[in-house]
Structure formats: C-alpha cells, structure tokens
Length: 113
Image (cartoon, rainbow, N blue to C red; front, side, top):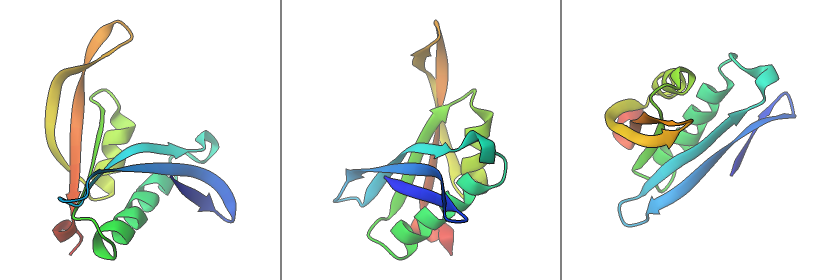
C-alpha cells in the first residue's frame, strides 16, 4: 500500500501486488482518492509517481490494472497516467445482477521514455 498525500494531508492510497517476480510484473489493484479531492489529477499524478518509482527507478518491467468497462473515471485516469488499453475481457465480472466487461491496462518501462 502506498499513501497519497496532498499538502501533508492523507488524500488516498494505491495498492500494488507483485504478480511475477521472475517477469517483474505487478498489478495495480486499488486506486483510492478522497472524494472531496476528486477531479484534481491526484490519482494520475500518484500513478505516474508509482510508475517512475517501480519501472524507471525500481525493480519492475510492467504494471497492469483492470477496471470495469463501465468505469469511465478509471479508464480516463489510467490512460492519462500513460497506461495503454491492452484489451477487453468481455463479460468477465458479475456485478449488480449483470455481466460487465473488464478493461485491461498496461504500462511497461519503455513507455516512460
């Protein structure tokens, strides 16, 4: 878990899970920002800082994430942070009585150059 701070105040958190040490691959599993601070680019800045720390300066080769296809805010955030849409897992998640697509996002070290 990585804490997000704004002006010395807790603003949210990111949770990253190592998927493969051998392939140097991790999932971004959680992106949380205090709703009172939404739409200020905080999540985008936090994801970019995370990518710099783990891909440019750190041990990883790839970060990946998945969101519901209907989550437009997540889609905008990951794309703005430099992730690419890698694919769609059609009807992958059962939620609220219906199937939802999963959007797969990826960012590799070379994307940062």
